[in-house]
Length: 345
Image (cartoon, rainbow, N blue to C red; front, side, top):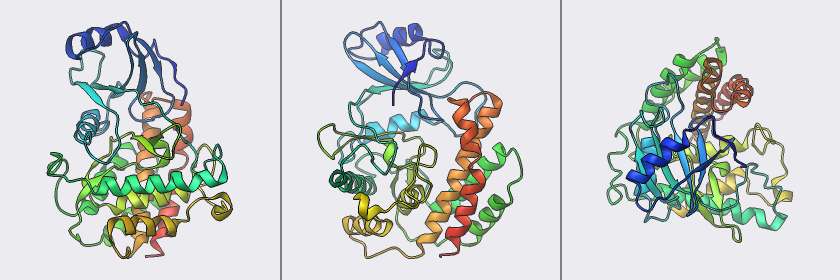
C-alpha cells in the first residue's frame, strides 16, 4: 500500500497541535500521506522528525449508526497489546469531533510486508504455505484470547451471535439499499430461518479477517500486526473462519482477491479443508458441522458491507469513490454465492 498526498483531506496543523498536547513524546511538525486502501475509515501515514505513525479517522459526512467505530478499534488493539495476537501499539484516541471534523486515533507505524493477493505471487512456491499457516495460527490466537483478562468480556453482547449479526446487517443493508436485489432478499430470509442454536462459544471475533488486513515481518513468515479491527466484537469464532473461506471462493485478482480456480497444490497454498483442519487442530476441536451456514452468512454480510460502500460513494462520502462504485457491482454476486453455500448445509 503506497500512500498518496493527503494535504487536502487532513488538517495536519490541527492534528499536530492536538497530539502535542495529548500524546506523550510527540514532536511535530507532521507530513501526512493517505493510504489508498480502506473503504471505511480513511487511514493516513504521519511522518514526523522523530517517528512515523498511522492515523485512522471516521469519514466526514452523514454516517450509518454504529458504523466506522474507530473508538472500538482503538480499544481492542490496546487490550491485545500483551497477548499472542500481534497488533500495532496504540497511542491516543481523540473523540472530540471539533479537532478535525471526526473521531480519530493514532498508533505506531508497523513496518512489514503487505499481501493483497492470497495467491502470494510475490513469494516463491515453498514460501507460500508458511504464510498461510501463520494466518491460521493468528486466527486461532484471536479466538483464544482471554476476554476477562484483557477486559474485553463486555466488548459485545451475549446471546446468539448470528441472530444478532443477521439483524444488524439486514438493518444496515436496508438503510443503504439503492435498488432491489432479489438474491439478497432470499439470502436474508434463508439465514433467518436456518440460524443455528447458540452452542456456547463466545470469543473475540475480528470481523474482517483476511490476508490483506495483516502485515508480515520482512524476513520471516511471521505476522507483525493484524489491522482493521472496526468490525470486531465478541461472538462466534466460525464467523471469522467462514470469512477466510468465503474470500478464497472469490475470483483471483485485485477486485475479487480470491482463489477460485487456482491449483492450490501446484501453487503451494492450503486448500479450504486443510485450513479448516489446521484451525480445528489448533483449537482442539474435532470438526465443524454445517459449515455452509457460516459461509452463507459471510457472503451476506460482505454483500451488506459493500452495499454500504456503494451508498457512501453515491452520497459523496467514500474514501475511494471509483473503487467503491466498482465494489458495489459485486453485491448480487455475493448474494448468489451465499445462496449457493446455503445448498451445502
